[in-house]
Length: 351
Image (tube, rainbow, N blue to C red):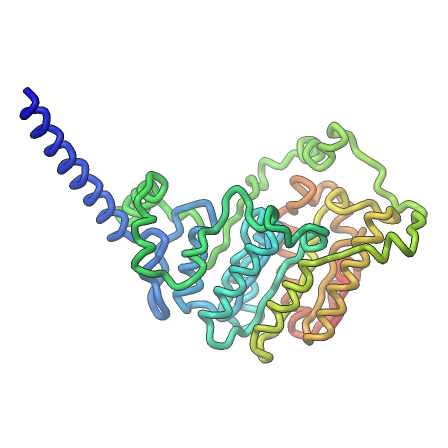
């Protein structure tokens, strides 16, 4: 009886090892995250909705010489519009809820794999102005981009592919290859992640925009400037801006850098006149100063304007609708080519 049990156990282990080997071979052969992708090789179709895992292969493919960086507040910038208007090959590498540190990793990956980047458009939301933005606890989201995807892949990284999530993505890629499925995100990183425009409901949008007030609309007109002591303002710190400046300085001098403060709804900012607004203004002044030092263009949408003050332009406090996205992209193209923004004052430009 004991001998039979030993034989059964051995065969079970052999079968388990064989099954694991076959699954690993399946994932490795399909290579859904493009670990084998190098310059001149096409990236795999993007089948995972988590951009963090899929974008590195787009960078390593060498197809693109210009990039959009940032969070979901700039993900609706269409690379095709930018590429056609600015004679470059744009990829949108913005990631939902990306921390400043995660954005820096993507910027570094792009810089290291593109010999001469033509353009960078970097969306900077209010997270760059947080006093603890560089703390270790703030570096990663609950969905971090694995460090081995943001550097050169080594053979020791391959065993990390053997898990249920990667098996699922490999299965999706197989379905795509067989014509049973479509890619989840376009091959230049662009995706309309907001709901269909036909489903837009202003009342529902307002419930999201003013969620902190129970869905009830708030008066967002500017307040009289709140007194802020010199001691308080002297203590304002924006440590992530040092990271940003270092990253910009590392790009070749020929790279044309545009820093953009995206147009969130006014609920996405401190109320104008408040101490928080004044602190944010000091942060914006710091961004403007570093833009001047490095010859970058700064485009500021983060203020009261016909875009940011209208509820009907938004799904929630951070995410605008597709008509605004189209205007946003076209206006940035015009500004990048030396033109003027639209006369409604939504965009303030520092060259």
